[in-house]
Length: 315
Image (tube, rainbow, N blue to C red; front, side, top):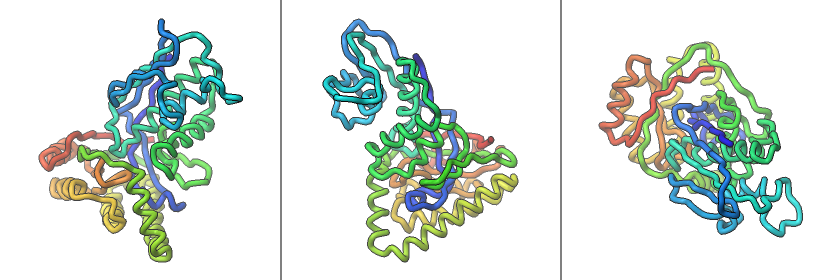
């Protein structure tokens, strides 16, 4: 049984999305997580995930380990009184997990692994799941990764389509009036989303009136961006990216490495640039004309980016 899931990148609205404002995010198919389930001569359920240096029998992992939590949805722990899964019985299986998505970089590596794992396991036990059910299951796993996640990672990756996301509201996919090009630059600095989300919450709790107004500004930027994407006015997104990045700096979730890459993109001719995701590391994005993509990517590498991805956003 095999399954795959793409990465994702947030275009606008990170952090404010936790507080009910809209965010825009799109899948990044150039990177993906892959899961393969094989029969094993050994008893038990074995996890083989070399990218995170994990090789273990699932019962040896803590119950709240994200991978174990997914497996136990389908193969409950021995002695569990009830559960939605199917007992593993005596058959041994090996779950191979690989991913080209950098960990803790804002590209949704954890959610992609969870989506691929849920789909591979559901096929293994012949228990088909709707996208809605996959999304709900992975959101619960995302809580183990991030504490209070917005839900945007699991949504974009599950549906593999551009998404206009408002927490607690029905999912809205959207179409691009014309495709546009984004260059993603990876700082190489791990970006633990739980920490930055927690720090923004501390700021909000210290002055809710002030930060609600800030989140409103981010929400308005996201709404305007959606309109411009739908009408094909993608070149106007650059100024919105710049404005969104300045607000994220105020939230204290940018970093010297991210700011350096944003400046480098601007100096190389990008139409706009901002950090993307949880911040404090991870990735930034730059809006570029297609013919400038390679030169901007090269400028980001010269400024310290460990990896770059050129991706086209389309419906």
